[in-house]
Amino acid sequence: MDKLVIGGVKLESRLFIGTGKFPSKKIIPDVVKTSKSQVITMALRRVDINSKEENILEYIPKDCILLPNTSGARNAEEAVRIARLAKALGCGNWIKIEVISDNKYLLPDNYETIKATETLAKEGFIVLPYMSPDLIAAKRLVEAGAAAVMPLGAPIGTNRGLKTKELIQIMIDEIDLPIIVDAGIGKPSDAAEAMEMGAAAVLVNTAIATAGDPVKMAEAFRLAVEAGRLAYISKLGPEKKFAEASSPLTGFLNEGEK
Amino acid sequence: MSFYSEYLKYKNFEFNKFLENITSSDIFRIINKDKIDEYDFLALLSNEAEKYLEEMAQKAHRLTIQSFGKTILLYTPLYLSNFCINRCSYCGFNIENKIKRKKLTFEEIEEEAKVISSTGLRHILILTGESRKETPVSYIIDAVKILKKYFDSISIEIYPLKEDEYREVIEAGVDGLTIYQEVYDEDIYDKVHIAGLKKNYRFRLNAPERACKARMRNVNIGALLGLNDWRKETFMTGLHAKYLQDKYSDVEVSVSLPRIRPHIGVYEDIYPVSDKNLVQIILALRLFLPRVGITISTRENQKLRDNLIPLGITKMSAGVSTEVGGHSSKTKSDSQFEISDKRSVIEMKEAISARGYQPVFKDWMHID
Image 1 (cartoon, each protein chain N blue to C red):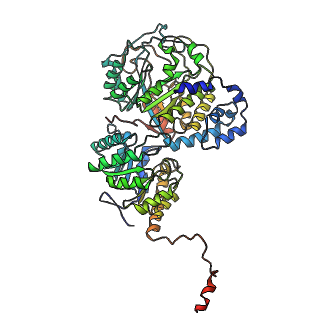
Image 2: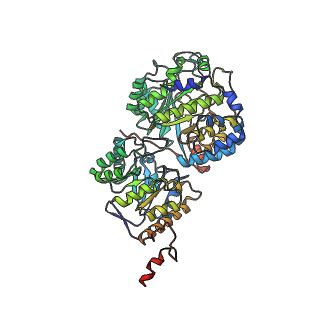
């Protein structure tokens, strides 16, 4: 499969996974294994480096790239502080910006996200901002130095699928950076659909973590992401709105030419 | 405009008439809706809805997992002082009660902190009685400064503060406020709060909003179940949570559902709240406010607490003592109320895991 390059790193896997919401941290290593995921996100607020047993980092294989997120940040300033803390705690220099000041729907604040991206990109972070799909905001994120752009498919945790499909498609067509669909993906078929559209990757948490069997579901998502990518690079045949008739109605116009 | 004007809208509402007219088809319609309004919420608190607890539970379970996953956040209360100037008929700290009073010194606070943090807990809730003389804001701030070394999240459950005082404690490191209205019915409020500053209904009612204005992160409200008809009190609690969530969308709002427990001093005029009623309360709240946190304390017994886990609970206390100095000191005070679930942190952790849930010890950090 073709590789995904982010921040100079070549990735085999186009499935990023989250670590929240699992019934037990102990199954995370198995989920990582069956998902073959290489980029793992976790909320820095949940990281307890002082406790070996409770520290989520202990459950993430060492060869994965950590993508700490700024969950809990209400504005750019708080996101920047959390990102710096993540780096200081040894989580590397990748950061998923999550600025949410709406606890009802958990929709991101694009304006503050752009501000935080700008500051952190300048400081050398590989910044992956989570955002509400919007072409202009995405362009601003590119200018601010983002390494990829992560629009939501539907409100986080809802498993509703690609409700924002049209807007994401425009972003895929117009933005030069990898577009990673983050949030809302509820089923492997949603992930496949995003990949067929040309998304560079997808980030899945709730759909795997809250499945009856998270380990198997992680594998299902891996297969779906691979299938979707393969379909995209194999160039899907064009979709047609009307059936192509075998005896065209205007065929008679060409009859004299024969 | 404050929540008081919302309260007034329903002050003379004919609750009983509304509740009696709810039919089973109303309940089905509501359970199947994506979003429910306040009247739907009230309908879910009706007697009729009690027949459909299983259907409500299935949906509440789904909604909770969607928003919070299979996780339960653990915390413990730390009682700093039980000096109190109020005469509240339902509380063991009542100034009239001849109990052993105690206030922790800063050394003792540090001792308690060490013992509690050694259990792995990272979220702490500090409590005092209402006495600005014995436990002024400056004392709270000094206590917070010590506790910051041991805990990642510090909440307060103390007397209501002014907005600028909330700002001061937040500046010192407090990220959460718990304050119960005790009873939303203004007349009953006046009756049970016999004397003391707590008699001021509106100052207490608006305290959560003052904290939101001061940019508190977590605000936890509730009514002391048993002081009034639980249907009305739950309804007002839900409306209050919704009011705060709508107006201060960056605040994480949660609700506690404390039922009156035995305590020193007697309060007899209690409206009963059965286990079944408590379950209905939790389910109705979850269906009305899918993203609001719901806390259940050790006032409830072990078996009930374990069974409530999958119904919508997001936060539980563990390893609890309601005595001042209860974790480390040899000279403890008398308690605020008798706890029922006396399990240690390790036991709670095991019980939550056994239910297929992840006990979460840390979900915040100081970021300044």
